[in-house]
Image (cartoon, rainbow, N blue to C red; front, top):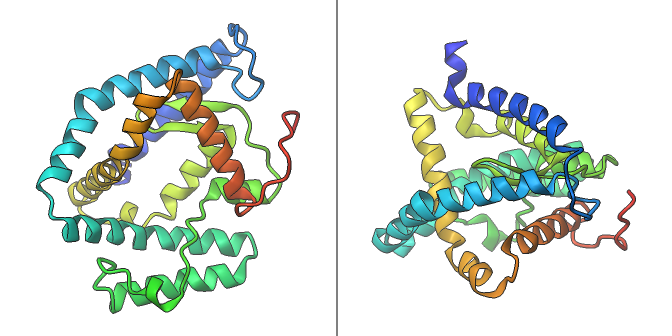
Amino acid sequence: MANRGLLNRFGVVLLSGLLVLLSGCATTNDYSDPRDPIEGFNRAMYEFNDALDRAIVKPLAEGYKAIMPTPIDKGITNFFGNLADVGSAINNLLQFKLKRAASDVGRVLVNSTLGILGFIDVASNMNLDKYGEDFDQTLGVWGAGPGPYIVLPILGSTSGRGIFGIVVDWYTDPVRYVKPNRWRNGLIVLRGIDKRADLLGASRVLEEAALDPYEFSRDAYLQKRRSDVYDGNPPPEDFEE
C-alpha cells in the first residue's frame, strides 16, 4: 500500500469526503442554475482555492516566471505536454478516433526522440496535430452527461463525470510511474507551477473583468468542456440533458 504514494491516498480520501459533502449539501442550496445544484458548497471551495492561490500558488508562479528563461520555460511546458499526449492517444483510441490517436502517438515518438524527451515540439512542425483528449471527454463521447458542476479543493473545477475522468487519467499519466516517489512528486509540483505560470495573464483578465469570478469561471469551464467533447462543434445547449 505504501508504494501507491501520498497522492493515491489523498485521492481516496478526497473522493470519499466529496461524496459525504455532496449528500449533505445537495438539499440545502438556494441557487437556481440546474447545472450547479451545490453552488453554495462550490462557492466555498472556490473561495478556499482562490485564497490558497493568492497566498501560495500565484506568488510561486510569478517567481517562476520571473527567473525562468523563456526557452527553458517553453521547454518545460513542452515536456509535460509530450507526456500528456500519451493519455490523449489512449483516449482517442477509446473514442475510435484512429487518425487522431495516430497523430498523438506520432507526436510522442517524434518529440521524445528528435525533440529531446519532448523539450522541443518538433512534431507540430511536421503537421502532427495536438488534441489533448482526456477520459472526461471520452465519457462524454460515449454519451455520459456531465452531471453536476463541482469545485474540488486544490484541483478546482470539474463535474460529476469529470471526477471519474480525473481518477482514470491519473493511471494513464506517465508521471505516476516515476520512481522514487520524491521525483514523481517533484514533477507534479513543477507541472502545477508551470501550468499556473502559463495562466497568469488569463487570471488577471478574470480578476479585472468579471463581476462574479465564480460564475464566470464556472460558465467558461462548462462551455469549454462541452466544446471539447464535440471537438469544437457542440450542438445547441440543452439544460435538461
